[in-house]
Length: 590
Image 1 (cartoon, rainbow, N blue to C red):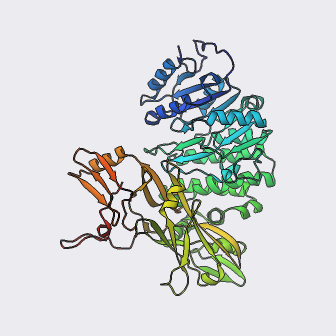
Image 2 (cartoon, rainbow, N blue to C red):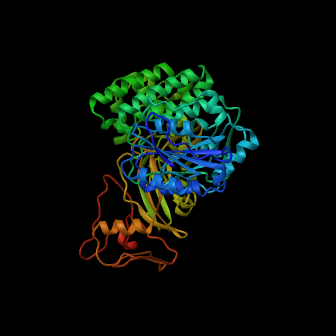
């Protein structure tokens, strides 16, 4: 029997003997991912490394959507390759990962999310690199699917045989989606902490990387496709605040136990303070009830005082630095005042006290608002005041600085959406020189996105008399429109300007849209008869007929209307005219 029912006892039926030890065991923890599971498993079974050199160990963590039955069918069809065990739901990914690790027999182990998938050559390339270089950990390039955000800085310099945990971007890529040498795992007795409802892969990965003889990074191929589930129920997206608090506190304690105090610990905690800790006091902090806000504030303040050294504080991005400073310098109401300023009113004015600069948050203590030593970062903080579409080929982002001498002191300004550099110029309509207009070419934006889509956070960089600096571009009060349908090559994409609810950052998202999704959404809106979207000057159209058949004719794009500020009135077509959107052709919202 290939599928086994077990909870706290070993399998009663032994696994059929394999002719030799597999090179790699792929451990797949599964919980209610039926919609994605087949694609995940097929991506492993189609690996060019071949079934004789790998095994799949899938652990069903009490699924209720039929995922367990699908696993059993795969195990019956591939008895020498797929092994399945079932257990009651454990409440998180740590337990099924540990169970799969206990059963894995390969020289290497690889963990794969059951809603994600692998590139066809992934395992063969990863194993070959580990054998060639003697690497204990190998990280292959990860790409986001359906607009899922992936930290990709570690891949920016291409392949690297020997990467340090302490002077690279590796701490920002601590998911367990890597190839681990089994001898290292066994020697260290590595397991996932089951008392961490979320983030449980980070202690495992940290310990492996800390003790590894060699860590290699491969950026020459799309190894791992990380999928943003369309139902948005990945546990890491919607964790309860109590789970997040417990897990973040245990993560900081784990790092402190693992790495001695000093620059190397700070290099790792820079990620955890700047991401996990700062996210706890992100914009969505406002939506917690008062009791939860008090608990979050107390936990974050305690962790900052205990773990964030002066050197670490100075290396944090300005957003994280100001938020964590607000927590340690004041109470919940002081923090809420800062968040309200950022999310509702925008970048505050600069307050001068002698030769010192301060961020002008209302009622904030001066000891943490001092931005003198990071003036370049402070000048790079801009607010989005408008996002509009130009001629179907360009997305223009208009930003503004509150600093009166911005034009003379900031120096040259670059605006980036992920890796895409926009064309930035001063807005001629603003004589103060504080308003910028940046054009992002849509063909470049689409080209920078994988076939599975991408999120491109918008960032500003300055290089003037106060040095080089950078900051996320926020978008207070921006009412972003629905995604607009664009065609790039043979594929359709939904492109949108959105606001990250955690940190208020402007994000340009590119998400693939299938014909089935488009037809389904149009049907759900109750549209009747043909719907035609035409672009001016190109003679192309997207046609939805009565029976739901979609045709895309020509090479043009469906052109979107403008995105509006929250205070900008909406326009509706009257009896004798068309809305501004319609002047450029009917748009299709997806």
